[in-house]
Length: 345
Picture 1 (cartoon, rainbow, N blue to C red):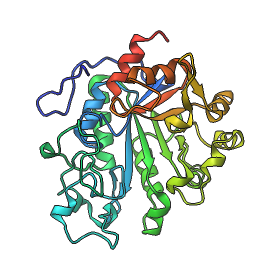
Picture 2: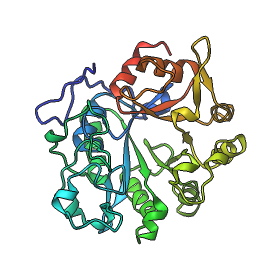
Picture 3: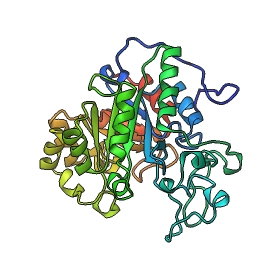
Picture 4: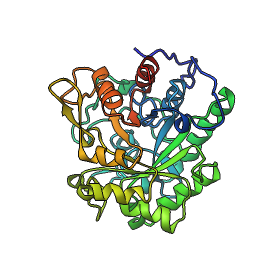
């Protein structure tokens, strides 16, 4: 079980370790641990308490998914929809669109702040997706702005003398532009304001939309570190993006010209275990490693294992020891940090 205990308000954690230098851990360490939506295995995703709990677990980065409010404020939520992680249907029952969904971009920041954030539920059934995680009925959490989360992380960096970084995803940029909001410009503005505008700074911008990634780098001239997320064509998450091509040797070569790392899903880099129990690497992973292009894999969950793994340790062994993957997104950063600390590098 995880070792970190929340203090009085549940906003900070024990076992803080001093930094060894001003540069990011990710620049010097062999492996990168990214707290996926905060410590989302223990507290509702993307809430400030989940961020603070993750911070106390000593990852290298804490991830933010960014969407826009009606009045143009970047807020931290995984989805453009509100109904799977908030009580919006109770507070604003008539504010859904024709598809029955509630969209963050239809609400001002002031309205978004009235909502309570809870554990993720299935949009159709209303049942909690991960049944053993934080109980729905105990939720007292709020939606943070992107800047609020950065302030918390930077404040903790100062008070603990560490340098845990920011890892921000631009969500659905083409959709946002169609709604009248340029989310990429908004994210870049905040990142640069808070010192994440160079490759030496401790931050990343990530995006599934390959066309938008190139726009951010080439047209919007963002000079900070960038990551290309890899999905599947069947997901239909990025218009006019061919993920099948991006996963090829040629596609990896194209991405290497623009980004500092790629972020594929676990099954896009490890297809299973061999007869002797070692990870079977995919051509995509081989292509990236041949080019020395760092790979940050999503998402390692102790309560949602791949079919080929009997427990979480098997997953981590396959990822780090067998496949030599550079970093991972995880809902359980404490368990990954503990594994790496106990494993000779």
